[in-house]
Image 1 (cartoon, rainbow, N blue to C red):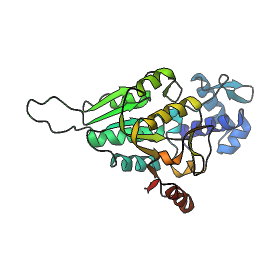
Image 2: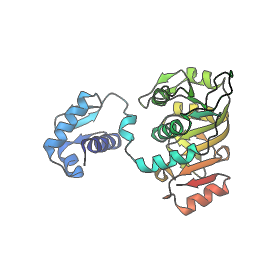
Image 3: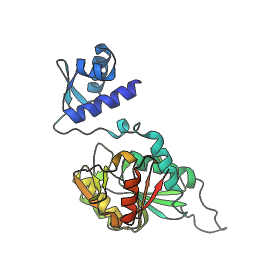
Image 4: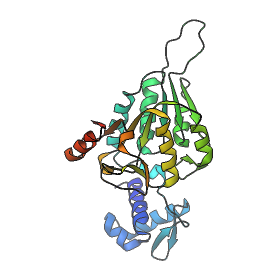
Length: 265
């Protein structure tokens, strides 16, 4: 197990249990206590946790796993999902992207597909191959270097996940019209719809869906049947769900019965 994988696992354990003990963590990860101590010391230097005698506790009152430590989970599935979503987007469209590791992969796939731009008539004004509206700082940063992709970034208050939320973000989204929005979610349930862990992120994702002609949800199969705190919208607002081939057949059937087109990759 690499250091990055150990750190990812340690942070997930800390988020789940609220406390880490060196000996217990060493047994879980099958490494020496000395290795765990070094890992915890380095994570504490990055202010991702607070060292205690014999272990660690979360940093501050609230704790959230930063985006960069989520990115390795289900990586291959997310890349395949992203490639499939890029094929659903047409040249010249306005695309909304909320934050998250899967939508970040979608942004990269869109950059590969549309980064070359459109052919232009002599004397015609330059037109973007794609316009991307996002509340995710990391997505904006990755796409800003692509001259053929126009980037519109909402305002708002930045979360650890690099997402901008709050009234300033809503103010920008209320002024735009989207052809398609691609939403990453924390949970999906055939009865409750799609969900996020935080109400402010759910509110912005809901607004994205309201402003779009087509709503595409991207998630690996691990999110199916999982519930989260805040509901984004019902399934009847979702047009397409793109997921991996491990999605259970019964879940696919229930989603299809709800009117959602399911694309598995």
